[in-house]
Image (cartoon, rainbow, N blue to C red; front, side, top):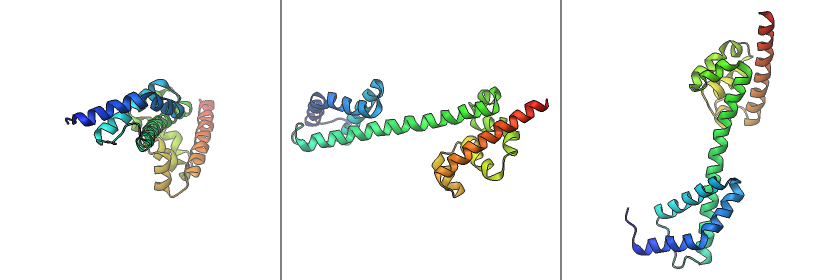
Length: 177
């Protein structure tokens, strides 16, 4: 995709005028310098892809547009990282409930769930369904809520209670050996 020289000049002008401001906006959202740099890069790539052009790069309209683009790019990165952390948190929970075998199987989410199957089967159905969706099928909290027809808060609470019951059952099983 070859850009006309006028478009290239516009992007260069925007970079000179707004790069530092964009970085500060991204940093205020992400609180991480390297992620903020990524957000600035993503924002400029979006400007190029969408062939954004204003008569003057220093116009108020252009400035508002660029600030909106960098905010959205930063929020997208923030949400992506948040979702990645949610998956990590579920695997960490799995380790604490099922032990180190689940960690070894955590590379394949279905196998990780299989490690906990005996403990999961001891759960009441409403808790089992939540654990199965979140851990075995790797659904998000929102997807689980939709699938089970309950609220997201209810999903989180049932998951918390299921982990507690599984820990108790694991403790009883270890006491019997």
